[in-house]
Image (cartoon, rainbow, N blue to C red; front, side, top):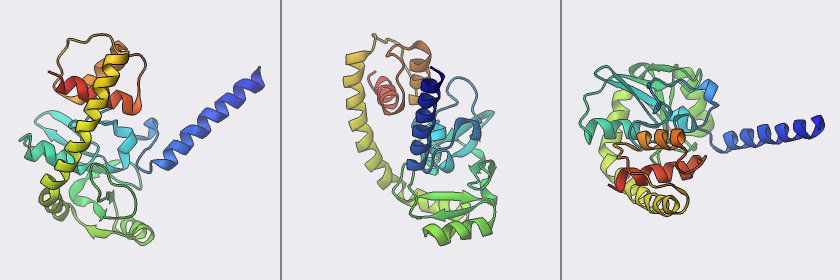
Length: 225
């Protein structure tokens, strides 16, 4: 019996390791810093994606006394430009230490061969120029500072969001189909995907769903009003 349990544990650990290798951006939960409070802290303040799964491209900023965390700079710019939030205290994950550092102090490698988040163009931050240059040498891309990167993202933001919205519309349709198939009726209204996902996890209204299924149904619940 002990041998069977050990084998099962080994398989689970191996599968988790393989998933982490597939998604370069992901880190284990115990390696991620979550700055938001409450039951929504696991999810991006704008798109609702699970933050540790995209942690290496995470950004953070404050809106008044509220700490926000984003899966990407794309979502952070969306919050500032489209949602009209006056954001301050910009931070980004240092890919060397996996800790948040002031965005103005970071060196960004833009357009490397590593995957982007909410964008076809990847953007990874480092606390030192030496670390950024090492990553650039191995993966390509262009070195930028924060102000230059913000200008670049704002310039392409409308075009990139148009592509993202189309993909999200498809996911919302899938979420609707899954909701009608596996969920108990939910009358509660939600103002964000993060809020909807937190509710689904706590209420188990659709069972113990996770990953893309949780994201899709969460997005549908926000847009079905």
